[in-house]
Image (cartoon, rainbow, N blue to C red; front, side, top):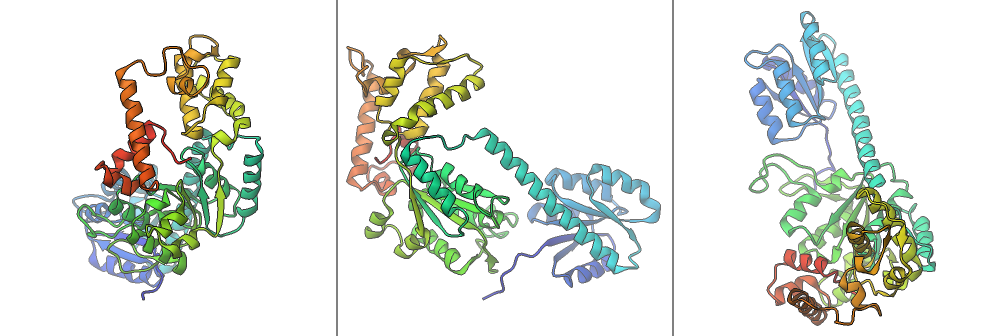
Length: 459
């Protein structure tokens, strides 16, 4: 087995081969992975086909100057860290390079190798800080857009206490619950209360990505691993280093991927697709499913050893129909959210509307409720939501159904039949989505679209 590796990659760009050789030797001694290019054209070709953490770039090169190369590097990757190498007479050009985006510069000739090593170390430390700040800003923007877990019901309060209790632990967590109950919100809460909260939280829907693409998304790939793999690319297991990886719809993974997951959990390392080096893994795995994984194990559709690795701690999110006390709070929150988005003035709902919403069974759970409220606000002509603003599915499931019945159009009757057909097929196959899709000869992606359209989930 190869050693666990994750070397920093540096590209040296200088038209003098001897200088490239010297710099490669000096920086290799510091355990960096160093490559060189003797022209701007070669440097850009290398940069386009591989990934580097830092570029050490000579300013005074013929044909394509260092300034031109820097500008092109910035176009390919605006976040790249570049150190310029220059003779004393080119200081004015260095100032221009710094304005464009270069991080630092060192003077030629290189009489003191300590200066080179120090400049590289300093630039890489600054890069790490900038990368982390960039991530935190992006995360803050996402968190401001997302809502927190809302609910005063006994079930939700128990769940939140459990989240706070297990979050500091570094164990795997399996979250179960119907579609639309907020499994990702719970996963994010676990991350935010954990010691990993200052690092990345990455969410992957295992059921929504084709298997070959999912493998490379998770583990990354080497250049040339497959058609279209033009450069080495990190996967989310590397990108989430030190943080939390949320694997939604874990039951939809193939046997081959399940084996790879098991290895990561057991050995704490993995290989990129097409790679031979083992890369250390330091992520907390939180997975989720809307099906009974134990039944999937018994049916031979899910590995038993992986199930026990993922299910160290389990959390179950109750469906919205069992949390009726939370519906008024959720409705209030969504009204405030979407009146702001759609620039409308909605003060609340008529009493009969709240009763209709409370009486409805909510097969699509919170996600369906949010969609219903947004639709109602978009259609509302008064400052309070009324029954006419609600879809027929809500009215037909309550005592507020119109006298002529819920289906007055052929299109509505057709949709009703299609939903019943899909539900019956799912029940026949024990709610195994892949098996059901194969039986009725419907592509799995199309099957998911139909489920989302009709808010189908397992109760």
